[in-house]
Image 1: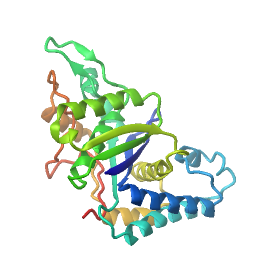
Image 2: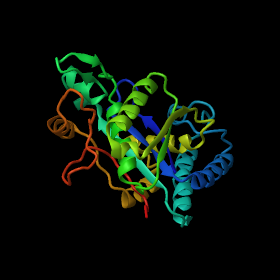
Image 3: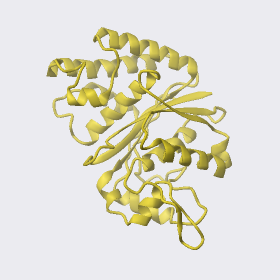
Length: 284
């Protein structure tokens, strides 16, 4: 059994990119990482990490200067890297992230956006389920679920833990359940999907950190150099791609609107396709 913890960044209005990211590991490794992360937070006198509060400078980061913020971002990357390098147990941890440019998605026709975000159409062409055409989040969400299956050891079932988001949970759960019902290879690998707060599921804080770091990198908001060490490490170990305009066009050509079909994103990527930001670290 494996556990997957995923969070998102860039779902706010006006965001140029939407990212879903996080980690997958065995329960025993998750316990080790949770202990390491709690100790890390204590070093900075933090009760928790929430990227939204960190980005806005809200409590408990209100009185942090630029140097302290850079120190925290660098140390957060270092603590996770050190943990990954020290473990020799199998399966190892895997990091995943899926990112999509918002503007090309918004410019798609309404029916295509419905289709890509979980909509269902009848043989007569009527939409029996509208999807979420204003929420690009559901495209990288679907991709990251399929990547989790594709890039982890095949004999493991994966249980998913996501951050609690009232506006997203219902449709995400529907897509997750329908993928499991429709495709037998997916059904054999998918466990449960649950939603929790970051205080209760501590590893969601690490997923939040990974998603936030991806977002800052992709939107060129890392101009002050914070997180540079982390990104140097990530770029040397990750395979990185992302959904842009051409990627969305490719998706619609290869995954056209078909009654009864639920597959919106490819389970296997062709070599020259760049639809996602996917990462795998030291899988054995």
